[in-house]
Length: 51
Image (cartoon, rainbow, N blue to C red; front, side, top):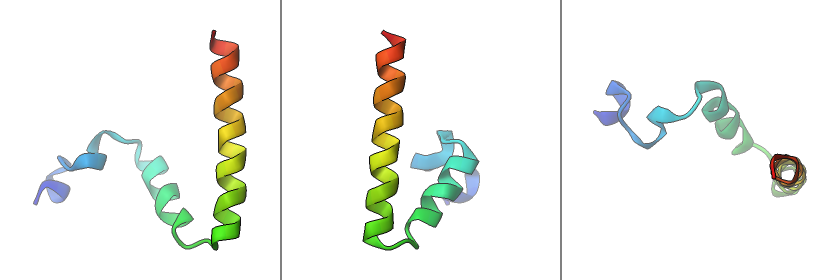
């Protein structure tokens, strides 16, 4: 019921982000590992520039 009303845990997340995270679930573990590695690099770079 919460999901249908948009009140579940993911309600505050960007819908495009949730869609992409769902798509990640279909990838192999190796592909996920590559994507997470790249994400970590981007986040680390962002945090470095922010401070």
